[in-house]
Amino acid sequence: MARAREIISSLSVEDAYRVTKAFAIYFELTNLAETNHRKRRPRAARILGNKTPVDGSFRGTLVRMRSAGVSADTMLASLRKVKVNARLHRTPNRNHTSYDPSETPPHRRLSRAARPVAV
Image (cartoon, rainbow, N blue to C red; front, side, top):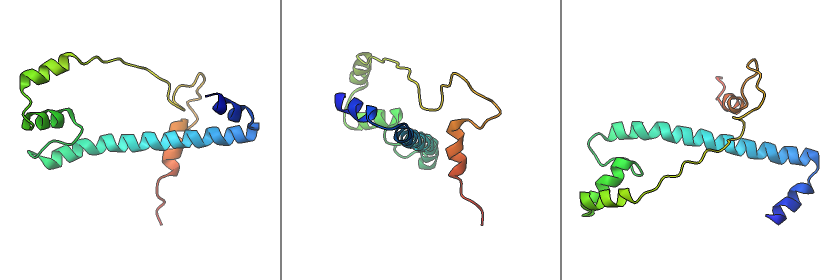
């Protein structure tokens, strides 16, 4: 962490802006990919119908556990041991102290720019 602080503190304002902008774009693209993935999962589940549920879904995990010979009692005992800790965090471009509603929100700008242009 000390090395990272050293590198960051040595950046000019212009370079710091570019690095910050690059990270903002990276996280925007990551958020878009996650959103698209979340939208694809229900469609995949509908298309599969009665076939094995989508990998990584809760239902799919239970079906695979059952087919592996894990009993319902064992599953419930395991679930009782699970502890969930909710962590709230700020995401880039979404928690502004000042926001002008007449402006396009920052998290929408890249999305619009990425749309294909009709020829």
